[in-house]
Image 1: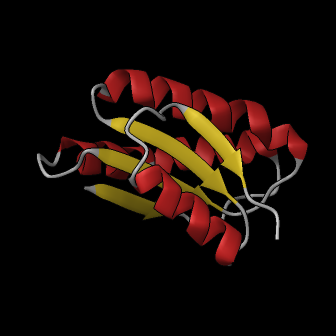
Image 2: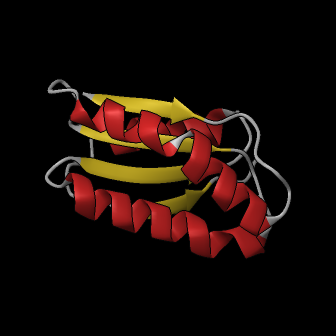
Length: 105
């Protein structure tokens, strides 16, 4: 079963956003992955500038490595059909892990 960790708000600065996620959300992500029912985790983040790409991709890759064989992906974008379609795809994509996917509306 894929679970989702939705983060509604992060600071605008990439460094501040990375720090806030690690300080306030990483433990929740790890707890979700520790649940025996969880086979995948999609971390859903709000849209952000290109300067956020590196930390978000590192989060996806490093957490996926740590959680293997469970899958971890990071999805960013506004609430809407594209983001929902991406989450549906990931729920049924057993070979996709460690990815940072941006959904533009």
